[in-house]
Image (cartoon, rainbow, N blue to C red; front, top):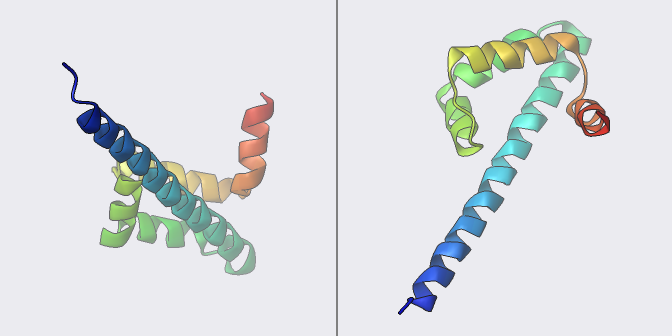
Length: 97
């Protein structure tokens, strides 16, 4: 016999985990957009996102977003900021393709 209450708890927890992960993905996207704005203003956006992604808080947020905070990822974030395309524009382009 299946323990329905246990299955419901597992499903609820998985749903909550997905919601929390999405929230932290939004934080990462905001950090990218902030760094792009900084790049346009003062030219320091690449350093800003690199510093953030290597920091303890940045690594924690990346992990909570489901992103492995390794150096390859940091370089990818820096390159994304270097290109200067806002995340909303990049996401729309990716959906169109």
